[in-house]
Picture 1 (cartoon, one colour):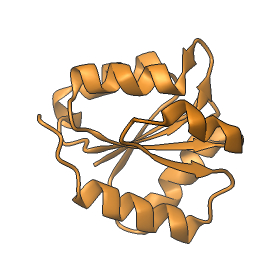
Picture 2 (cartoon, one colour):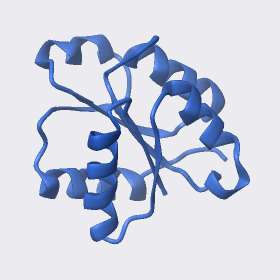
Picture 3 (cartoon, one colour):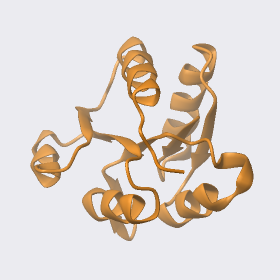
Length: 122
């Protein structure tokens, strides 16, 4: 299962629809706090990939990723950003970084690969 995190609901729901059409199960969260709440529910214990925006109100992407891994070590993470220079913020972290916009076919291919290769310790 995939968790899409983006404070822009239109972008989050668009990504969810793209991934759902490809047969992937997706949940959405519109803030970092909502993402952490989602990860704590029993119905979402199977989340093995988080696709997150780089910039969200009150939370930098880098800090969000570190907090994710404190709670769920090994969780696969894909970071999307409209800022190419943001990739440097993730140097040394095992994340997949892509610039927006991302083609639907690329999103599906990466999400499929990353969720199958996930090694999250649940």
